[in-house]
Length: 104
Image (tube, rainbow, N blue to C red; front, side, top):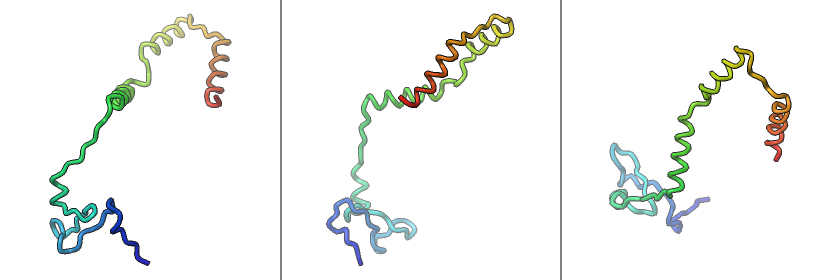
């Protein structure tokens, strides 16, 4: 059985050996257009302002440190001084919220 893509305008096919590219390698063409013709036209991509903003925010978030050194230093100093107190109700509330956050 042979599949023929001659009716598909987007079919990518390998050119015959008479139209090989550099160093005898086969070149690709789209719907029979030679590589010389397709090289003259340029594809363009438009990226929305929102996409650029999301990309920038993602980049900045990846650059931010995972540990907030100032907060860690403050808590460490308070623990060393014996003044750091944790409310058991706050701990329980946080545990419950985190356990339900995956469910809801």
